Image 1: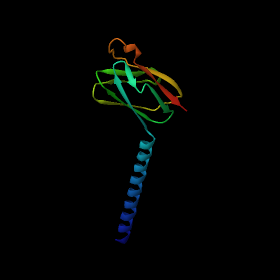
Image 2: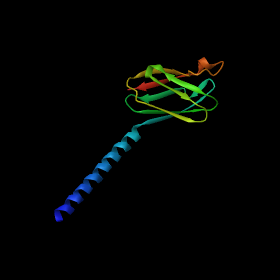
Image 3: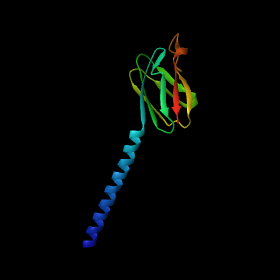
Image 4: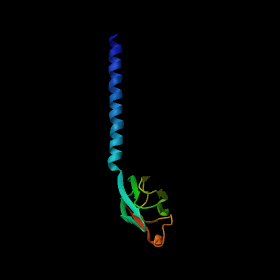
Length: 123
C-alpha cells in the first residue's frame, strides 16, 4: 500500500512539473510576440510604417474607423479584410529581412491608390 501512495505522489509531482513547463513555454511565446495596432480610414493607415523583427511572431490588430478596407502585403504573403468598427487580427512570422510595401485592396474612393505603407523587417 505504501508504494502505491509513493507512486501516486511521484505521478502528481510529474504532472505539476509538466503543467509548469507548458505554462512557461506559453508565457515565453506571449512575451516575444509583437502586437501592432493599426487604424484604417479613407486613404490612410496609421501607422503607415511598421518595424518588426525577423523570426519574431507579429500580430497586426486592425480597426477600420469608417468602412470596409483591405490590407495586402504581397511580399510577405499576408492579406485580410478590415470591416468597420471591429478588430481584425492577422498573425505572421517574418522570415526574411527587407522592406515590404502594403496597400488597401478594397476600393474606397478617389485617393484609394495612396492608401499604402511599409513593413520593415529587421534582422
